[in-house]
Image 1 (cartoon, rainbow, N blue to C red):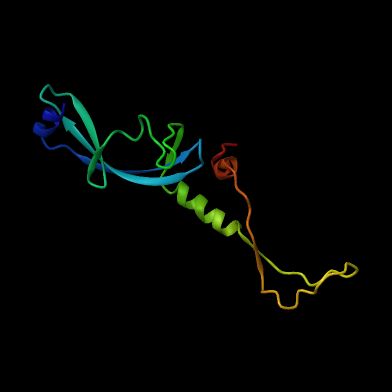
Image 2 (cartoon, rainbow, N blue to C red; image 1 turned 60 degrees about the horizontal axis):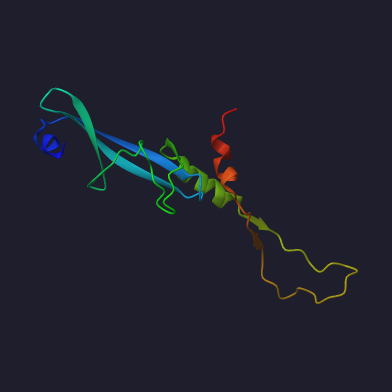
Length: 134
């Protein structure tokens, strides 16, 4: 088929971007593709995909996680992964530091630094919650 692809007439090229989330390890990423539509010598249409200038298999047929190599990958419209990352960054809360607790013996925290960052431990279900259909 590569010979046919090389000799096929000029077709149309479409730019598409997808967001991917691995159901195994929770890794998320986005990738843009150029989808080249061709017509072979017999008049049949076929497509080829390129990403970053290299020919790649269809991202919709069997996506592979870039982190763990798993194949259980959710495909979403572009922008989904970056919006979740922004949501996760915003979820890190600046908690004000309290003073010493009255009635419990112990050293006062007079020289302690300003606000303490409290980080939430996220799970895969937390990442996918915004995509849940109601």
